[in-house]
Amino acid sequence: MTTRRRILQVLALTAFAATAAAAAPRVAVLSPLGDRVLVVGSEISTGSHLDRNRRDRVALPSDYLDIAAATAFGREAGGARAGLEIVPVRTRDAVARQMQDDVVAGRRPATDIAARLSPGLAAQGFTHLVLLTRHRGDARIRVPNGTIGTGRLEGLGFYVDRYSSLRDIQDGDAGLGFLAPFAYVRASLVDLRTGALLAEEASQEAEAIPTLAAKDGAHPWDVLGPDEKAGALAEFTARGLAIVAPRLLARLPDGR
Image (cartoon, rainbow, N blue to C red):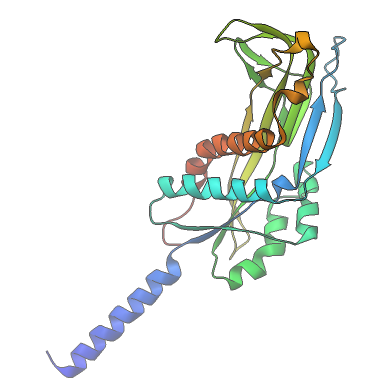
C-alpha cells in the first residue's frame, strides 16, 4: 500500500468518526415541575361535576423533586435506549419556569420553553431536550376497588379527602378519609436544532393511603411525615416516567 493511499484512508476514517460523533444524539433532561406542590382538599359532593375542591399551591425551596424526576427519566432511558447519552440538567431561568403555567393551561407550546433554553443547551453539545412539565387531568386516584376523586389534578401534590371511608385490603381495618400523593407529568421531546416537537407523553399516577387512625382524631395529612411525602412524590413520578420514557425515546431518530 502506498503512502498516499494510507494517508487517504486515515483521512477517510477520521472524517467518518467525526461525522458519527456529530450525528449521535445527546439528550438533556430538564424538569421545572418540582418548584411547587399542589394540595387539593376534597369537599362533599352535591351532585355537580364542577371542581369546587380547595386548592393550595406551596412553593418548594429545594429542587430535590426536579433532580429526582430528571434522574428517574435518565435511568429509564438507559434501559430503553442502550448507549444513548442522556444528561439531567438544571436551570435557574425564572422566566422559563414561569412559562410552564401557560404551557399547562394550553396558552403556549412546550417548545417555547425549549426555545428559550436552546442556546445554552446547544452550546453544551446537546441535540435534543426532554422537558418534564406539569400535566393537568381528571382526578383518578387508585383505591382497592377502583378509582375515586373529583375535579382535576396538576403536577406534583397531594389530594386530601376527609370524608370517604376506605378499608385496608391487608388487615381489613376501615378508616375515614385518605391522603393520596399524585404525580401528573408531561414529557416533551424537542429537537434543539430545529425547534420541532418530536413527541409528547403524559403520565397520571395517584394512589390513596387510608387514614386508619381516624378514630383517634388523626387528619389524613398526617398519614405521612415530611420526608415520606417527598419520597412518595419522587416514587410516583418515577413510576409514571418508567412508562412514558420508552414511548418517548422510540420517537428519537437514530444518528440524527
